[in-house]
Amino acid sequence: DSGVTQTPKHLITATGQRVTLRCSPRSGDLSVYWYQQSLDQGLQFLIQYYNGEERAKGNILERFSAQQFPDLHSELNLSSLELGDSALYFCASSAARSTDTQYFGPGTRLTVL
Amino acid sequence: GENVEQHPSTLSVQEGDSAVIKCTYSDSASNYFPWYKQELGKRPQLIIDIRSNVGEKKDQRIAVTLNKTAKHFSLHITETQPEDSAVYFCAASSSGGGADGLTFGKGTHLIIQP
Image (tube, rainbow over all chains, first blue to last red; front, side, top):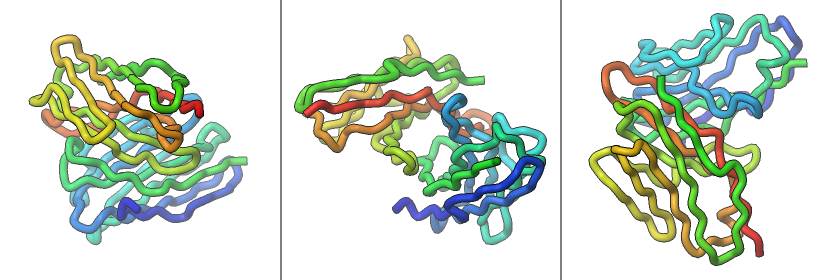
């Protein structure tokens, strides 16, 4: 157990819908990262938050957004869902920087039908 | 941005033999190189990492080497066991300026033959 929690474990929805994925970092970690894992794209960095503020953006679509709350948990919002958004979404946390060890949560498997 | 290439995509070795997975990166500013192991449907788990001020690091049967001049790093697993079967990912990151997450290789499916 990494100490990073994610909910829900599985999510099945339809095209065009909007979903929210939730992540709680390890106790004491200030940075939260979101990654998407799919068969064709592999593991891709989406976005990083540090202590409530957006720190860096990766390959995140405009239909996706995230935020980190004062209690440091984070939410990833995916809207206007397409079939190609079906993937495993991982949250990771680290003490502060991206070069600090990142611990991954168990992931949320999103299926868009 | 950073680009990480990983080889081979599949590696089959006999139990007890050694396995080597190689990665190259493009951004000379990268200075942190972790390796993750992922079993099917589960989260990536860190197995070892190395920073650019170190050329080699070892943890029991696992070792990582880094060649900053050539921009490549490798994972070495000795005395492989059935539980080593998994997908292994290398990654790179830089602490310069703003952080930008980890850039991952495509993964190596390691199969340990009994």
